[in-house]
Image (tube, rainbow, N blue to C red):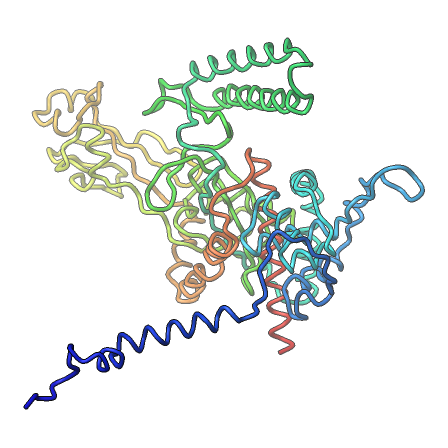
Length: 518
């Protein structure tokens, strides 16, 4: 008797009932069904005319609407005053500055900083279409408008600060200041030595001369104009590079050879995030101490922050018309010189005092043994002199009033040092073999600063620095995408920084007003 363990491979009936045969039958049945289906074809080559309700392209709470309404409250007469197209006269109608300002502000809030990208977005993005009313906007129009109104942007900046002040959402008594490196629109390979720049300039002039000799019939006028314009721009950039060499110290006084970028001559090679070096500008931003709105901004070519505090305060006073009572900074600005200068202006500086360089390092530079540092000498305050380890006297020579401290100079006798068996360890590289010591006495402003920073109130204020000083840079770089300038040159980079700060303030104001109404 046959056991029933499964289908019998010799039984034709069992083959028809197998899973494989059943699957094949189902598949063939589906093919027959699909052949009878009537589906809509997707034709992407067609051109369609569709009605568009522009007003409903974006919802009522969209940020583009809020930006449009805010910009509409500003006085744009300075922008409109340059328009020379009038009703009844020939010429194409000009775009309203209200639209162009709103486009740039909204674009930066979306991380878009290029005119060509905005022009393309105006063709298909609902928010940009709503702003333009479905009208195309040339990238030339956008680009020229962004860089051509530096003074008017400053006025716009002041208007916005006045609105924020009238709404009582800013506090100009306490200001936070910080700096951050933003990459320039140039590559590290664009930096060259003086001889290389001069050689490239001669080549650029030769190219221009050859273009002038070209037959106008060989190429279109548009192509010829483009070539000449590019050659002229290259020549101008190289000329600026030569001028920048005059501003920098010569190679003989620097650790490395002096180099300047050919594409952005005003950029400097700076240390940036991650420890890498590259062409950049030092962006400086000041914010108020209530909601962190930007009250002033400027651009520096120096990688150091020490020299940027005084210009920053002057910029704050110019933009707000008010001198702050307190300025909160980090260690990059809290030098003794800045403390004294701020105190002389009646401004309290809050920040950590920069630690002094190591005494051991100073001794090594002078060739002095660390065992013969200043601590090895005994100061006699009654007689105002020092006593060296061998018992010799270092008499007081003079007192010098520095910018940040008072220095008292003490010097040993030349005979005592010359006959001393420890002179090589004690005097080091001093040619006269006379050991010298300097006793530093802090100015009253420095002493007052140190006492202030010991208080709990000052420490609590300094803790707010990350919120008010560092947050704007984090937002601008992360949300607005300004990790690298889209424009070249110090002035144009400053213009872009101001545009971004305008966007930061406007969106911050909108966010606060909505929170109050919620």
